Length: 243
Length: 198
Image (tube, rainbow over the protein chains, first blue to last red):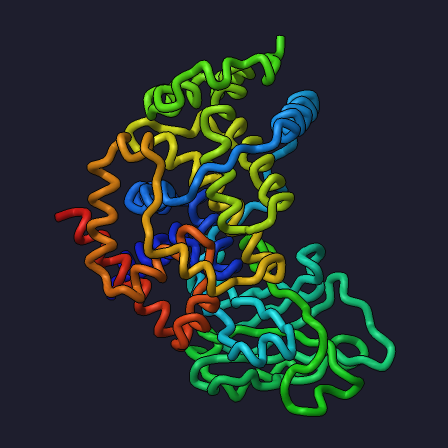
């Protein structure tokens, strides 16, 4: 299958609506950057658009338009915001969803971030990844960078705070590793993790893998699987100067 | 002066002509010029369609209302990007609404629960008479192509597009691994594409 076919299918699924959130975000980012992607999206929207005929129209409440007008008044009366503060320069991604079995998903409620192959423009040979873990879809909690060549990782807290009696634990999951996530390590009090913790994994596997962070009892998960509450992973725009 | 929405000639306009692609496209172009009256008319002509689409995905009226509000603000801001040759106007508007609804659903999947009753809504294709008249040929062509798919895959495509089901939702409903669902969806989409091109 060619790269173009892959992109066409990614876009087709985006339009169909079946992509997970990080992949949707990836397509939306590419859409803003690449007119070719925009064209593919419009083509798929046209192909599938008649399906929408099957949704029955529903009359909105009269109050809704009044609300919209009010919101529009607000938008029009405030000076235009600078567009996005963070602009994605060039992102190429091997996005791989975290394929939890449904049982694990409901038990651990752990949502993991797809790792993002990020390609700084001036040095396209750099093999760095960035993954961002967010609390409640808001501030990034952790930033994970992986140097693919050296199989080195660096994890740093952004807004994450130490929790008394709790530990943060990093997990990796990849098809080759079976259906369950595997522990990469428990973060120390200073949030540090041995930078060689990924040295046992092949770069090709790391490229396809997804990572997640869970909150566990002090010292790490007692079961060898994530047990704690969710830390949501989210693709995060970054640029070539700030890996 | 801002138009008073309640004084707009609601039922006086023949529903079909008010929603004709040409009229809707014209209104979008006027909205791109920041014409508030055109915006009100566009809303009046298209909001029921968009709300129906979004409500079917989110199954929660207040949530759907929020997405519709956001959708029309985006339409106001993006109207200048609409290009006649590339998109049919209704599809362009529906896409903005659907994307908003699906983004919401993917970010807050607990907001609604998928429901096997939704399958029962699949087999019958129900469209209103006026829509049947409109571009019937195109509609038939897509339906014709979807009808060529195996029954499970027809349902998958409809549940995904109309009800916002994710790969995982489909996998558990059809008792298949997520990867298999992905493969099936890709095959179905390719088959639809080929069929529409033939």
